[in-house]
Length: 467
Image (cartoon, rainbow, N blue to C red; front, side, top):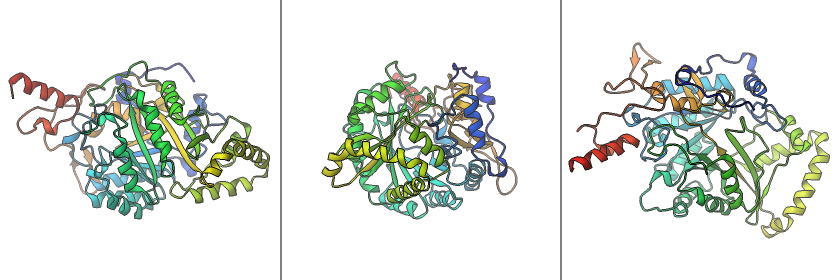
């Protein structure tokens, strides 16, 4: 890894998305080349081996029914109209042309459940019909069992519920109390052929509670597949800004390990840039967690020989069967596999017996998002989490840093002539990165419809004038 070189605001605004499509189906080669240039192409790197891109995010609305104290959305988001369905389809098809089949596509926003239900279903179905894997990213408020069932019938693979104290849900004073919400969401999705993910933003007020949150997920490993912890970043409209020194990749990994009851191996596999992403995969038996992967030649060989294999996250038995067939087809892996199985049997044997043979997988992911004014050039270039913009996929952190310039621009009509305008009324032109202009505070835009710093300013103004 090279020392960080931060983009200037002008460079951030001028950052080029992926505009050209790979030739002859070489979807992974572009990412592999970028990782090699950065010295990140190691034996344990799954980016470029398992898939051409970690995910492509499609924002289908800018509106949200929460006002998080940490939020990547724009001050203008609540006024921005939903991008037309035809444009959404065009961006989905662009993801397919850039990264190929089996790409994970996040259906996100804002909160995507605020989009018209019929359109949300069509979006999920279009991703599925193109051979990709749609995931719903939501705060869960409107994600009813009925909706999740319908989306699953139309191809939904994952549902990722975002729950944490930055959302300031009424009646909850701690992350531990929010476990009631998490449990409600688990029950909504239980039994559906879905991979269930939980996202948690890490900030000063919940850092100490990370072990308790992990313990909750550990107790529900029979249903929960992944827990993602996203570190505070100074970007977007949230009233909280830069994170304190206590919140780092290593400190959050240590807190997760405390909740897991053992030191987790966040080094294998590597997912893109290690300053951006850390990943630990565990096996759960009898309430205890065990590291699945080790830093060994065996797993390096497994990653190499299973390159391009896509595992079915909706059915763990199909996934296990596919993996076992791949191992059986590679006799060179048998000695290492038998040695690993013997070690795990000794380590986990009692818990497996206590659990009557029931073993679950539980993964932990750490996303170290960047501040808008401190975008590392190398990390942006090797990004594996992209947003489908109007001109092509672009690094998620870059997109967030220049969000107003992305979401406030008029777009050519996919069908017909002329332009589609995102705002029903003119607003101030987008300002430099990291400092979006406030929406006008007026009688036709009361504070209850505002979000983030603009809402805070409006409420403070009301107090000053005695309203």
